Amino acid sequence: MAGTDPELVTRLTGPAGRELLSRLAELMPTYAADAALGVTTRLRADGFDPELVTAALAQARLRAMAHDKFGPATATFGASAADLYFTADGREQATRPELAVRHAERFTAAGVTAVFDLGCGIGSDAIALASAGIAVSAVDADPLTVAVARANLSPWPSAAVILGRAEDVALPTGPEARHTGVWVDPARRESRARDVSGRARRLWSLDAISPSWAQVQAWAAQVPATGAKLSPAFPHSSVPAGAEAQWTSWRGEVLECALWWGPLAQVAGRTAAVCRPGSPPAVVTEADLRDEPALAALDELGPWLHEADRAVVRAGLSGALPGRALTPGIGLATSAAASVLPWLRSYAVIDAMPLRPKAIRAWLRARDIGRVTLKKRGSAVDPDRLLRELSARGAGAATLVATSIAGQSVAVIVEPGGVAASMTT
Image (tube, rainbow, N blue to C red; front, side, top):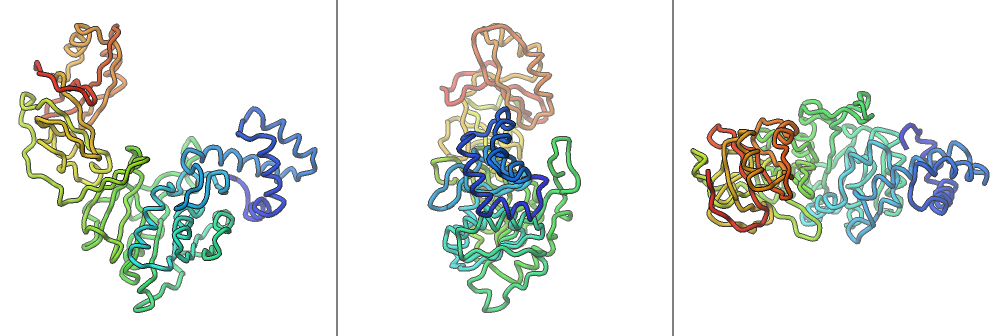
């Protein structure tokens, strides 16, 4: 609903708007841009307001775009992409349901019964909290976003959406805060500055977020059960004493660093949570770190290569990998055996050599390999250029890892889940 105003959103979420969206779903069960003109003409002929029709079509498009992220409703997240209302920015920036549910579980495990959701956006985290039986006071300063959040949270009587600045909310203090929590999602984009695709410009500095980092810490001092959703770029040096900073990935993509204070902190310090569909989250902590020296030369590379999930790397915990690191901090290690840890992938090492395109190309041609999958960790090589330089004809395929060992650029040819072979370096 980009470009609409709060009044139009209120109309679209009211009886007339819901009737229109229902009629639109009948005419176009799956959003299709090439059918939009014909559907618009039909709806206007049926007597629907042209402005409302335009807003409904925009909403249908956003719901289609949100399908993979939000999917169907579940017992722990009681809304689906087909039920929710979105803004263009809100669809992109809202917490994934799977992660929102994990946030809510922290509050319920700590005995929190009421949460102030400061900077609620379109209401994704508030929905998870309300679905868990927690009373939610959701606050946002943008009138359009508040109108959308009110529609999304309307099925939960225990959830209230308030228009206002998060900094102006009167939070409980002392004993009154015992069963109260705060969840804050500071704005990390500048809505008035857009990139070429129309997306709000991302803010990378911790000092640029709104509410400020100092304000977030002040809330945590006032209400012990405070959590905050921050960027994966959150600096390790800024983790407050006694708090937990957890970097979380979903299907290998690092989506957030969440800070947890007081009873919400499960492990003080830096942790990583690796989340995948159908599996419980795998959590890595600083206690899992090993004290093994990194490789000093290419010929020390073992028969197995291990790759840490990117959340583990972002959390600075790649030292938990089994064996010895190729280079500290890049998330690759080698050992004599495969590993079945849920937060890493093991590869059989087929061969390894200095990263010289001519020599690698000769190696590929000698083995009739024409298709190369390139992975890059800790290397400054241009992947597109390297793949062009390695172009060869052949029926076979290979996976090549461009990385570094003791400051030397190297290429490691691996087989995912394969049987380790002897190397010829």
